Length: 432
Image (cartoon, rainbow, N blue to C red):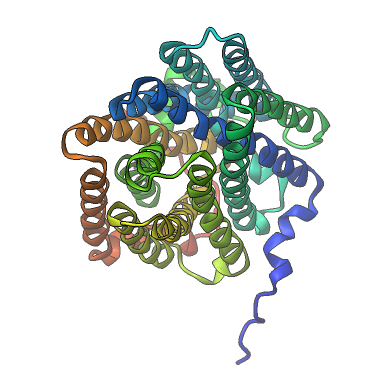
């Protein structure tokens, strides 16, 4: 019996050989780089204006909570309309919000409330468009390259999380917040151009309606929930990513507090803390794009989540800036490796007619868990301090991961796709 050939580095990028996927991937890299410049700048200007950790948490809540509320609608639109059209419209809304944010900061009329209101509009665009974007991938590459496409999409997002903050720190230090917001607004044109240039994913996904009759929106939402409820792997992925988003991810807006109050560094060094978060994730994405298909999703998620929690605790107690840099690399690596396994499991488990709605649940877990966690942790940090808050939340997350990992049948649900060849799935009865 011969062993399978060793993975080659160039195999990590094989999905990019397909034109439409390469177009969307490149455009998303540009747009997400601009978004991360904004993500770095918003907590910085809010904290400088208010001096309040609670305000930082509140700004993050308003930026992401609309996506939680609107993700079900976005998932429904992704399953009822052409996903390319939904992606285009959501980016036009995001462009309007980002452009207005740049204008108010350029003319000097911005305030914390104005800033929060406009990033809320950008969150609306994210909620409407994220499920459609995630659902596009199976139509941009052959089925055999789906996992590679999902992993490269994570690599793109986290490369932007590395480049955006590093560039944003320089721009913020030299030209100010208005220029950083302007660059983000301009970056939206990359996705709009890619949508017009792509040839794939123009048709609407047919809905599996009973008797050939088209269901109404509420009935389709109920059917999507019932479908997700019947798949343990989908439910577990959504639950775990919700815990990660609410307990682990709020460290991101608190980086500005660590940089200012704990490490006593300037704007450029603050940008590098963010950048290392993305760099660690990029390393993980390239690694798992090359070898991820050889590792079971359950094993990858368990080990990576342990490492993620350890890095979070390390960052929370780090007494020096350089140690903060190292632990941020670990946070980025562990986060990417964990959520990549969870996202890939959902993509491989679900039938395409339900893909948008199932991925909307996944998006809701992230976009709802993160702002809620950031808001609550911001309030707690104002009482007990940011270090104790980060370490305490990471410890709770570690306890959850240990509980799940100690139940092989539960964590093994992430590998259920290995037991099936993805035949058409019978629609379960909708929720009452």
